[in-house]
Image (cartoon, rainbow, N blue to C red; front, side, top):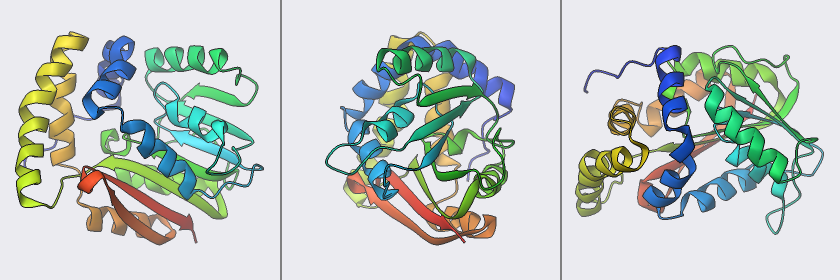
Length: 241
């Protein structure tokens, strides 16, 4: 396995702040819009009843927090959501989106670290992370923190990139992820390092079975890893024991 990229909090926060203005656009372009379906699937897995307090870790521009409040055919929305991120520029954009959606009274965004979450023990009913756990310096610490904040029986949903298992598709995906994605990202965002960091961070993130073991060690039960879109993304779900 290649050496992991530098994930010191200041470096990661600075990198995401630099690409914040183009972040949402690039996500839509680089995923061909499928990222919306991935987020909706993650929220469905929480089996919300409409009374829950949610915690969205590495919230970025608040897409998942907004999805949790959207509700619809998949079920009622969360009653309220706390979004946490350490990138100030991303949070600023997220707050604008929350206000534009009329959700400022139900979604609160605060600056904080996934390894030291600003929430009390057992104070939330559901926790989500969307493509952020691989950016945490010590994922096992973040997973333990998420377990700490969840009430007993509370649900967890984590979306993270993976590598497809189908041989031909796997080769194409790795080529796209390693060569095409960084070039498109640099061209649109104007940031050299951020979209080279992405394939490096995915390549050194624990594979599904190993990450499931991390979740179990952190205090979760009923841990699952479901591949989405041929395994390009994995949805990890669990409950607090």
